[in-house]
Image (cartoon, rainbow, N blue to C red):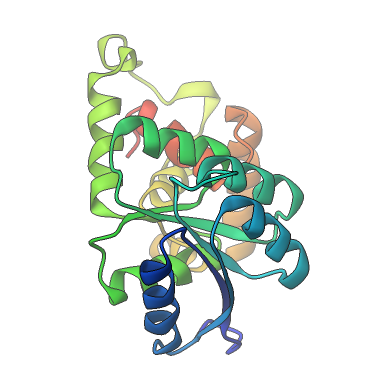
Amino acid sequence: MTADSTPTRVLVVDDQTVVREGLVLLLGLLPGIEVLASAADGAEAVRLVAEHAPDVVLMDLRMPRVDGVEATRLITERHPGTAVVVLTTYSDDASIMDALKAGARGYLTKDADAEEIARAVAAVRGGGTGLGRAAQERLVAAAVSGPSQRSRPTGLPDGLTAREGEVLTLIAEGHSNSEIARRLTISESTVKTHINNLFAKTGVRDRAQAVRYAYRHGLA
């Protein structure tokens, strides 16, 4: 269960019937999760989000009509209270970055087990990120091989303070505000202040963009 003891309301999206029904069954067995509905493509997912307002959408990428990236973009733009976790067979750089740019707060591959899916769902509902190992490794590799590696600044970028840099690193590691507060021994309101400040300085709009920023600048 989440901190307020209410179940996390989830929408499952996958065009393969067997996979979709299997995910619905699996999630239904997990404590603290309520499956509201399922969709076979991105267009149906967007409609069902408007109808049911789930906390989290578990989103496939490759689907007919409207794919997972476009559906993620539409959902995050129109329904900011709903978080998207991608669950796909694809772990290439383009798929991961396109999903994160569209607003996904989590990215898992379909070899993830029930525990990993549950952790990601709980993390994004709590305001954090839920990145599987494959996505983390790809982001690290992209950061290391990118142009920023050749001209990495010696100090923190965009005027970030040391504390804001610490908060950003913990965001990139997937920690929620309450977890960051405990680790840094500060209040959640102080964490939120640091997050607002670092968002303003870096120009990022949400935690998914903050994760990409952190990896791009070597802070994660």
